[in-house]
Length: 143
Image (cartoon, rainbow, N blue to C red):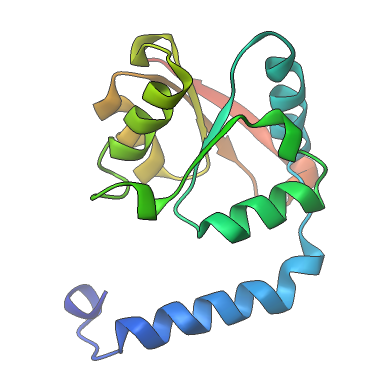
């Protein structure tokens, strides 16, 4: 970020501020209903995971807040891999832990970096575009 924007921010300080901000606003978390519905239905017949750039404890806390923790058998976070998105590492590890071939996976993502990571992993993907969670749409993108 410093290189991209020509700043001199302390990375550790930014990470602490980000965690503090998340913690202060975590009570405001609401699910993106189409994604929650997809996870709820998928977990009935398939193994489902989360591969998130957030800390493990924040991922679990968020899933618990929206009543979705039981849908996800595997959770992969940056601590589990050497490279984050857009590298495919998180998605490939999630597939490995689920014992599912990458080409049999569907990644539901909210960022172009995540879609690129899915492509590099050889997985199908769906991009979630939303300005407000209640108006979310799923856009599929085949690889």
